[in-house]
Length: 386
Image 1 (spheres, rainbow, N blue to C red):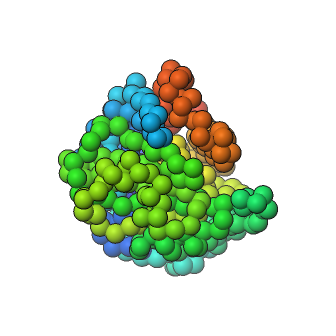
Image 2 (tube, rainbow, N blue to C red):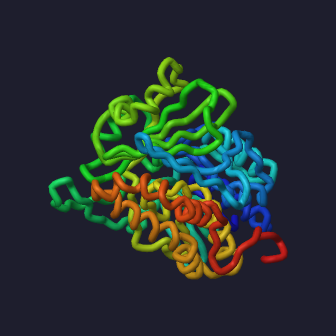
Image 3 (cartoon, rainbow, N blue to C red):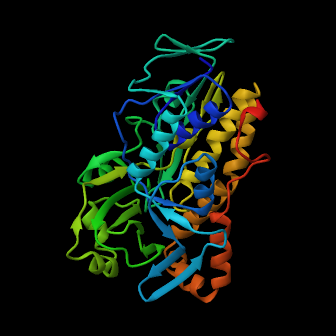
């Protein structure tokens, strides 16, 4: 086998699609059966929509015209200049990618990777031999941890004292339940996400980002009768506890039936010392994550998948490390800057009023985020590039 992909989320499935198009013998291992759900904002930026279309994947959903920031009486809109984005249920996106992978002749097996060994010629995972391994096994990647690529970082409490936080977890990057558990597991200063769907018609064709002193709420229309609400915060508490910080949004949702359970993910920040180890390449959340603040997760995963397969085809695994840094540079710098600035209450409180006074600046920032994620080389990897 040329390539084994461990992890059947968007990053892993996109890696498998690129590999199949490049003529590689590829298989995907995913420990969860069927369509996989995960706590996420479910909004695809225009760049992500274009990247999926280039792979022949067109998931149904709701067109998104732009992003709206809301804080009490202040609100400001920025429309996408690059064309519409799309609100898509995570399960819908997964099903569309999975169907495309199977149609490409790729094998998807319900298996868990337990033991990874490698030499100069290839990788052996639980007795299965492959020339290379793509680890796309989520925010708390067990393969990343096994290879010693986790890196601790210091997080700040509200009193200013630092403490160490590192990777770890189940490997899926998502939990399920009432929303209490994720908040308690995440240490003070560590951001986590909670998401719930509501059965009601969307009231906007924008992703609404509602700002409160200690949290943001992202409202994404994902179907004609369904909206998703995701909360990002470092504070502890249940989903309903956090929703209380957004009275206007809570009033909008009043009387609407929750459509499914609350799902949680976190701690969101995961630092890695490298994205490659021998013949193993980390892709998607497994490669490291800062925060979901800018909404670029899927676009970044798709770009990394393409770059990783290109590195395998060209026999240049080290080149993937360089390309990963180029692809994620904008995301890492901007997200770190926004997180740092919005930890200061006066700055956080002034963010939306400032965007309202300078709409051209807000629109320019949204256009940067909405565009394609590019390194030095772009385009769909095909047989001609083998």
